[in-house]
Every structure is written in structure tokens, then in C-alpha cells.
Image (cartoon, rainbow, N blue to C red; front, side, top):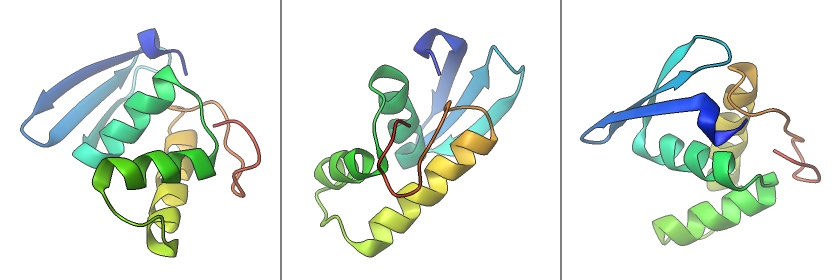
Length: 93
């Protein structure tokens, strides 16, 4: 999704993103917002998202983080916030 299509507002650790292309507004927590912002600037595979997120959070890239990232990316796809996603991390997000 082009970065220009998303309009952002934030209050404390909550974010609201408006998608110009669909007319939908979504509320995200700080971590989900960070992932979506990064994806809008730099498309990535699931493995790349997990790697970036683990570095940002200072945690190990374990199964729990991978499951969270896969769930978030699937949700973003269903909400038309990312254009495509391959669950195994072998394709573009």
C-alpha cells in the first residue's frame, strides 16, 4: 500500500490510520502501527518483519513473535492495508 494512501493520527500509544483508497479507519496499538508504517515505506516478507520487530523491541525472534506478526499481517491484508502477504515469508508483504 502506498504510504501516501494512509493518513495517521496518534494519541499516547494508540494510533488511528485512515485508508484513502477504501475510506476505512482503523485503530492500532503502537507495535502494530510501527509494523504498518514500516511496511508502507519498505515492503517486507514475514521473516523480515519478524527480524525488524525483534530488533526494535529488543527480544528474540521466537515462535510467539512470529505468530503475532503473521496474525497482524493477515489482518492488514484483510483490511486492505497491505497489498499481499505470503504466510511462509517467501513473498512480498
